Image (cartoon, rainbow, N blue to C red; front, top):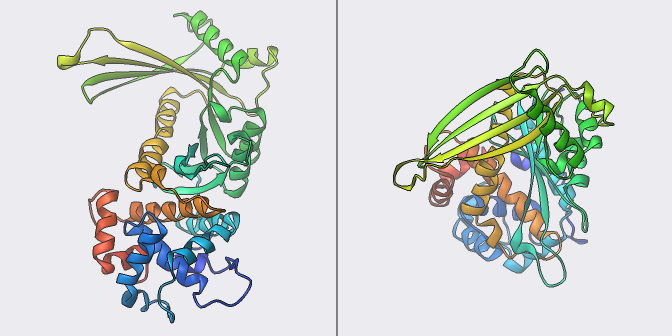
Length: 378
């Protein structure tokens, strides 16, 4: 059964306060102040406090804030101790109400390193996120374990989401037998990139299409061509697919639910004054549990890169995520969750055509707009 929409504050009601004793500054007050401040442009605990002090009268319309606003040291200490996995679970509970079903939707999974979170003793944290191309919303994230990589984090993220009926795309890091099997067992389909981490599979796909030639009766395949002119170049993307996959099993390539193999051939040519008359050609390989429909598969592969352009790039440019030096305890991961809450709320707003950075400015200037984003206005 789909989760009913709940308010942001309701979603975090079950979050445990990491402090052992009763404190002057309530956890829900710290959460509300931090979320509102980050939406409004804050990028550190100091700026969270500055914004909150200026908007204290407005904040008191929603929670008591009997002792005023905590210091930046208090914010930093509490969020460094706050259980990041529990915080993430609350985030996913909230977003599941906004996206109650992923049936028929495309979900891209990809990792991102938060570069500023490293110090002399520990490396920067790496988060694997799920992103809906239809809504533009981040659905959840999981931190990779120390001395591990995305291969172990992806199954954990998949388990936390109800992916039934969706199409999951992952780059070559996720091209693993266990991950493909988990997606199929969950009732979803996959499109997985294939590179040198699966050298035998990549070479087999390349050789099959090289040998196919024009004789479609001998080796059946279908193609779809899309051309795009933008940014001083012409890009032509050709998607070639086949449902002839039985030969892979003969090579001990057993992939759960495999129905098609794919090549995306991208040809780029500069135009105008920068033109050299020479086109660059790039080939990328994929496997999928979807039928061999070239138009659908080409569109799905193209949609995967939206997680880079519409999520990761925005976090770096509009939120300056890589520049953030918050790093003590769980604080880096928890502040990353605050950014994703803010990004989802700003993405969901259709009342203005402003970009994300300008929406943050508007939220900081106009508490009526901020209250509307958070669903706090009566």
